[in-house]
Length: 299
Image (tube, rainbow, N blue to C red; front, side, top):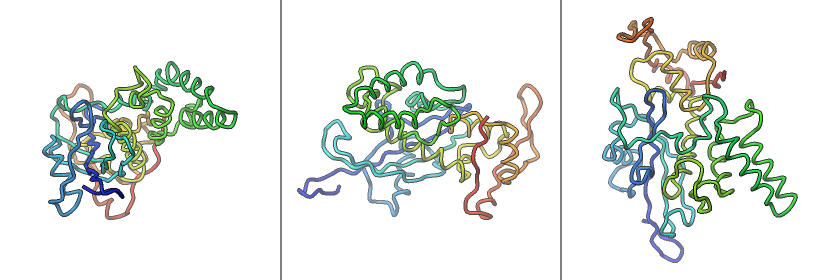
């Protein structure tokens, strides 16, 4: 607990976006009502990260890999009670072996369907989002505000797909929230995407944007892969997180140039078709340079 200027107690909790990838699809661990796992802040651990890892194991994510603190969420009215509460948000990556993910894992593109461009621009953008945003823009109180809204729409949802910025996840969600197009805004009966309690979808958008930026310069994607993997598995995992299709040859050339992986000498077995070589993450790269990665070679 912390206290405000009027000495009122303010609860502090943890919210975690715990991400796994299975069969080329990204999932997040969910709790009650499709919300993010959350719990009270515990002071018994030496660091917040140690407390998060212990707490996550109790929530069903056995072994967290990469963990990063996202942001402190403390807006007034972020809970249904209306009182002020503080949440420390985290992003965590987990690989649970070859076991199937259970019902407590939710595909993250169900919550933000406009972010998945692997099969081209999602229909929801042209059919629902753009007409609704155009109507919202035209309701502006003056010409200056109308121009400002039009500019925001053009940046978040550009008409030219080549200008799509995969990292603007939070800006897009907040634009849709301001326009009243998501259920959490309290003005849409059938909002876009699967809603989450309170501000949990905003926390998810923050985590998705952070992870999409991170995979371009840090090899965190390997936290989501088994110890041995094919180059196709690596590419589909990156595509799943970025929501984009990548150029196969350029992607493999960049992976080779960056010396991120090394051959294990083993190949896949039991699958139809030609066996594929198995690789492992070359962990020495972390010692050789502080930041490893590159821009994604889009198709």
